[in-house]
Length: 380
Image (cartoon, rainbow, N blue to C red; front, top):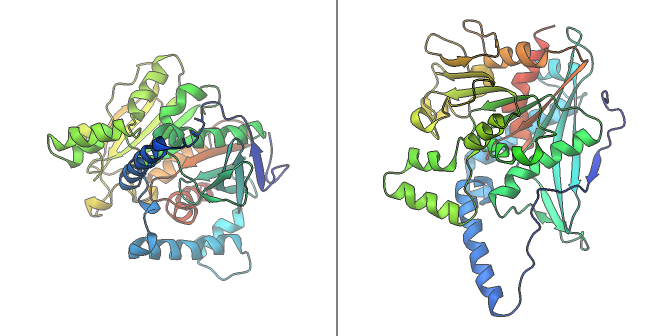
């Protein structure tokens, strides 16, 4: 397997798109008008419920500020000469940071830009590599017209769930073994593609406040009968997803994996009866816990970084058949570093991290990846 920066180019082209739907050609004549209307409806549903950043970002002052501030920190991580905070300086001492473009080549060429974090030196005889995949900031163009590049335009949940797994497969085909998969929030829809990619799914799956199903989200936010109407609209438009059911089905079919489920007890988007159930097969190595981040306002529990998700007296451990060691008052970022990243005998542990709906490379770097890198460095 490859070490840091060895034989891994800044641009990867990959053509095995098995499982990724071919975009339909636009019909001519009267049907073209109907198709345009239907696509407009589909895109409206997608942007409203799945891709908030596909709406005009300039209209959301909070997102603009988050992106600007996260961008500055991301620049400091990659610019070794810039002045920076002590935490950033420590991370860039132990890790290199760079972007890699993955081109999925077909009739439509999809270009996904991921961010690669790689250890410069070992910590307790181990090196860590994190590959950050985000749904935002990607592009596509017709194969024969590369100049017609535009924003990536997934038209159904299958393309959304399959694309990150094909990118993961491209890295594996390039010689990088992926040891763990982290799905955060919307990133959890990737679990709906597990059955089509059973041969490349890592042995450890970490669900970090991931969406259980579209149906549970509508049940959480809307009263009867509006919840059923909206769910029906999502299903009709091709934007229905049930990652929880698909993961359980995947493990029941003999594809055993180590599964870590991290939930917030008062998650604004899905919690309680609308959170993950505990119906995994008994043979599954499972750690399932619900946390109450304190003293953080509950609306923020869904997105708060893992270094603020702490095992306190309110933590509810629903299952632990994986011997996942979690000490009192320990942060989940630290527990993942100890139990997952430092495990095994191989020199490298590679984690493929799929961010949520509002995650860009810069925001994901600061909110999702940096706490994991800091926790790993703390184990030296």
